[in-house]
Image (cartoon, rainbow, N blue to C red):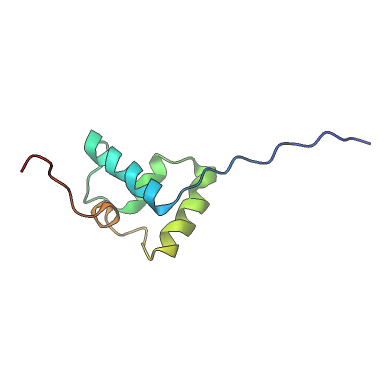
Length: 80
């Protein structure tokens, strides 16, 4: 009898807050723009995790065609 079991797959928690922060960082670095659709994030998130990401976006009523700017909200200016 084989008692060796495979470890459970690692499931990062892609909460909406984490997704927003990831998108904000990508915009700040110039990797993506606020005008691009949210689905551009699939270039930066492992494919095996994308189902979790889509579920979280749907939960908060975001569509993949919505803009990154909609996801991250308005910009904050600290030096006003």
